[in-house]
Image (tube, rainbow, N blue to C red; front, side):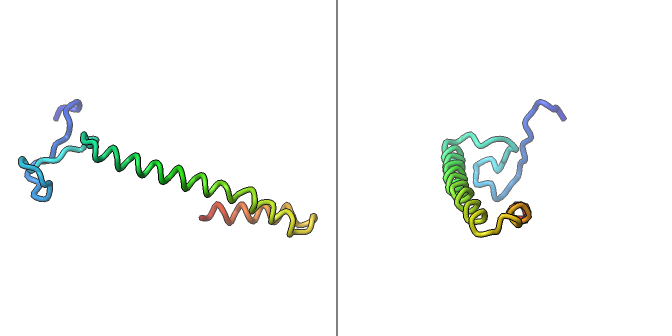
Length: 84
């Protein structure tokens, strides 16, 4: 098997193409690119909104915890955030 040749699977009944072949390569159609762009856009928006809650959450912790317990509360908060 040539390492430079693309890997093509033949006789795939569920492929939905005339030759019943599928390749292990990037999708050449514009439809796949639009799905990727939609996914990337949704991830970016989610990251922005997720990041917007970090500073207010930290301020709530700093204002509601006594000064002598702030370091342990911030450490425990970071631990809990890293679990999820």
